[in-house]
Amino acid sequence: MTSSENGHDSDRAASPDPDTSASTAAPRTVGPDGAVDPVRVRRAQIAKWTLLANRVGYLFVALAMALFIIAFAFEFTAVMATLVIVALVIGCVLLAPSIILGYAVKAAERDDRERGF
Image (cartoon, rainbow, N blue to C red; front, side, top):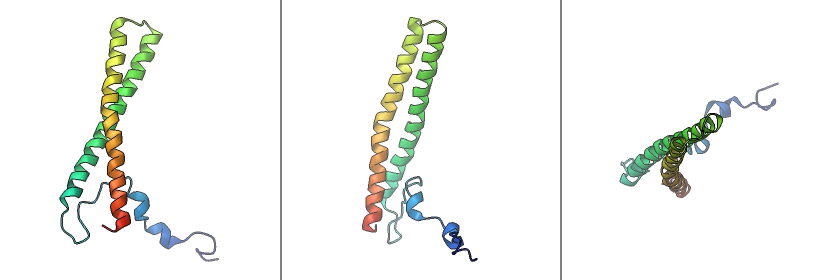
């Protein structure tokens, strides 16, 4: 029984599909003609910053949740309530624009791929 008969194609498994890994990879900065595209360079910078803002924003949301659980378990004081609110607000302020910009970068990259740029 050959590898293609048993359902395992070693040629396909050896080379990754570029379309499936494109959403997690950094945007390409070189155009189809080999020149550096300033729009793609800027898009890559925005992608880098949105990824960082996402990570820090979710960290602050997790901190707010942990502080809330600690405050609920021990003593819910005004200081703990303030810390929970501040952590949640910081997380939301970071997450709202970073999620929107992250989707915008992914959509622009997908559109470039579909148009062959």
